[in-house]
Image (cartoon, rainbow, N blue to C red; front, top):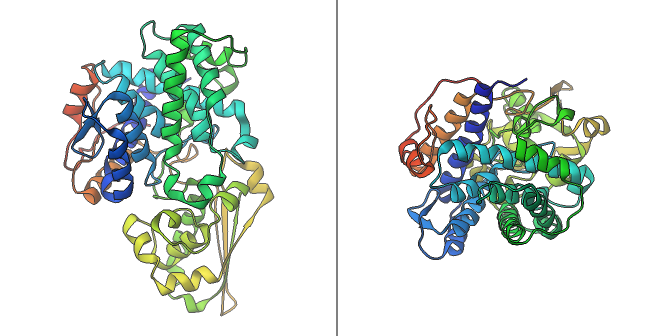
Length: 429
């Protein structure tokens, strides 16, 4: 059973990671920053992360949700197939801005739980055609909105909010395949749909089905689901340490480990990559035309890791014009491994086999990526990621120091957020 101390660390990881990623985004993705500012509109009290601007609560939540998902570096809740942090944290920041940090952390846990339960309810088949961040994520936003409102989440209103959010949510994959730039609209859509659904339900609860009765009970009582061994949904959250689609991470790491044994592309005859089905499909773009596409092209990312080592924001941009990367890309083939598909999402395996012109064969298998539940990061890992983002962004990066107070959230953020590198801290997982 998880201890209260461990639960506290998990909540802080989710908050710290999303704040750092969203605040770095304006420098790393100026297009997304312009979009966020255009949505924010009039001045308000809630900060737009990474920018010297503030907006009314809903507009700020929409803008921050876009920023949090715009550089493909935000967290992921694999059993729900949802980028929960880019929805839950921006909306919590807006709705609990004047409330104690303890209340904000409670909302974060509830939001992740709602995302987990809704994603599990919709299932893997749903994710194969729809972006669950836009659909199941709407339930997370509805839960945060309802639980932050007067009455603290009346069960009837909360049930109605979740049902309405899922009824009106949308996120068809086809729009995302044509232009990755629009993918950050998924968490913004979830925020808007969930917020409106909760407001409507609080005004007049609808006669919804009983499908989410257990979910509502979990959110109101904060009791863990028995089917998951007493663990709340936030414990299944995973973190990214490459700024790319999560489905590419295991393959990237496998290639990265082999990169030192491939000094030049000309010694390589072929590169075979085996991955689970979702990775082969979702991350299956060809040679990228932009940085956004580069984050989703599995063949390209494997070639980058082999030729240049760890993919970073700088190296991805440079690699698009690198002839060594292009040569390896042309020799790389990706195929689905049915056994890997069966293991997903509990594991996200990848296997690489490189045949050299000499006849030698290099192989590497990765069962699960860095930051996954199998390889859970510490709070120091998350703060280290925030520090690197601070250096890249040149300031305006929000980072959580190694303490949790009970002051109003806005005061705590002013205390804990620095426009320089974040402080390190000690803490368990």
